[in-house]
Image (tube, rainbow, N blue to C red; front, side, top):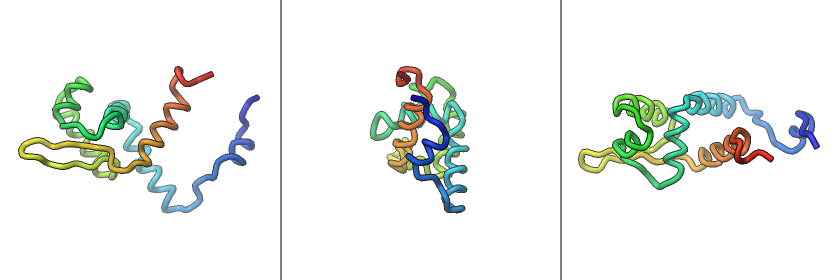
Length: 113
């Protein structure tokens, strides 16, 4: 049985408020970069990671990671805390985890039937 746009609209409540549309678009734009999405998936698997831990897991420079973390923090997708000379990041909004789960369900081949 195929899912049509009409059937899907009956199953899903869509965004209608202008403010919510803009908030969602800003968040999605920030998440749309592959490296930022990878960082979010990494952070979603644990309570928090230091910047150095993220650099080691993702495999790029600290400067590059810091730029991407800044974008995600500015959009309030990530939260951070400082402990001495280390900065730790975590997912700032649990709804982001739901969104990443929906992306996994929609786009990951292991979840397709």
